[in-house]
Length: 450
Image 1 (cartoon, rainbow, N blue to C red):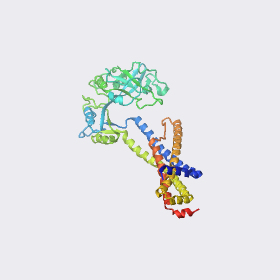
Image 2 (cartoon, rainbow, N blue to C red):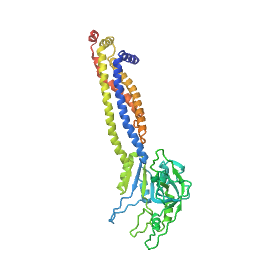
Image 3 (cartoon, one colour):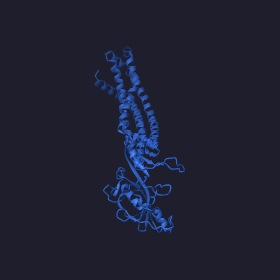
Image 4 (spheres, rainbow, N blue to C red):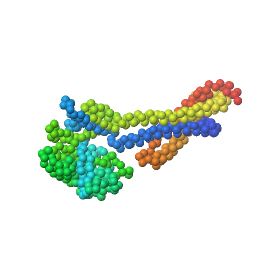
C-alpha cells in the first residue's frame, strides 16, 4: 500500500468519529498549550533578568580592585593598581582589553549653585564601549586637546543653592543650568576649599588659601531615559589621559585625594588607579579569568557570578514549570491511547478484511500510528496558536502593570517547533501499543466479529 493511500485512509478514518477525535485533540491542545506557556514563562523571566543584568554592566567584564589594606603588617606586600598590572592583566589568556579607571570627587560651581561630582576617568575606548546614549554633544575623544567632561543625565539633581542649601530633592525643581552652554567651574581640592572657608591652617600653621577654580569645558550630556533612570546618570566621565596630567598639575607636591601616601605622608611619584576593568572575550571564561586575578592577590568582581547562580535557580523553576505542563500532555497521551484502542475494537472486521486481502502487517501498524500522529499534529498546531494567544495576553497584562518588565512570556521558534514535534511523537507513542494489537489480530476471528 502506498504512503499517500495510508495518509488518506488515516485522515478519513479520524473524521468518521468526529466527536471522539475532537475531544482527543482537545486534550492534546490543552497539554501542548500548558507545556509551551509554562516553559515560555521560564524563558521570558530568564531573558528579562538577563536584559536587566546587562543594563547593570557588561556580562563579560571583570572589575579589579586593590585588596583592602588592614595595616600593621609590614611583611605583607601591598598590592597596587598601576600600569604594570594593566600590562600583566592584558597578557592573560582570553582577556580582550584592559582599562584603568581613576575615580575622584570634585565640587562644581555655577553662580549660586554648587554640586558634587563623582568623576570617572577612563580611556576613550572604554567610554565608547559602555554604550552610553548621548543626548547632546559627544563623548570625550582622542582629538580633544584639553580635559572635557561628559555629564550623566542625573547630575543636575545633585546641584543645590549654596545660600539656602536647598536643591532638587527639597524643591522637586532642577536648577536652571545648561551644562552644555553655561560655564561650570570645578574645584578639585575640596579639602583646601572647605578649610579656607573656616579659616583653617595647614601643617606649617599658615592660613589655607582658597584653591583655584578650573573652567572645564563640557563635551556632552547623556540622554535622559523615559523612566529617568540610568546607571551612568550620577557620574561625570572624562578621558583619563587628559585627567591625570591635570591632577598632577593641580596637586603638585600634594597628595591627590584617594591616593596612598608613603610612611612619611608624602605622595608617590606614580599615580595608582582606583579600579581596572578587564574585558573577557567570552562569557564562558569570565569565571576562569576572575579566578586567575584573585590568585594574583587582587579583588575581582563580575556579574557572571551572580548570573550563573540566578541561571541555576531559573533552570530549576523552568524544569518545574515544564513538568507541570508535561502532566497535561501525559493525560492527553492516555486519551489518545484510549481513542486508538476503541477504534481498533470498532474496526476489528475492517482489519481482518485488510489482512485477508494481503495487506502488509507493517502497513496496518503504520495506518494506526499515522492516525495517532495526526491527532498529535492537529492538537499541536491548535495548541501553539492558543499558546501564542495566551502569551500575548500575559505580556500585555504585565506591560500594563509593571514599569520595569515589558514581557514575561517568550516563545522562541525552537520551542514552537520542538513542542509540535513532541506532540506528534507523544501521539505516535500513545498509538504504538494499539497498533501492535491491530497487527496481532487473527484475520478469521476479526472477519467473524461483530
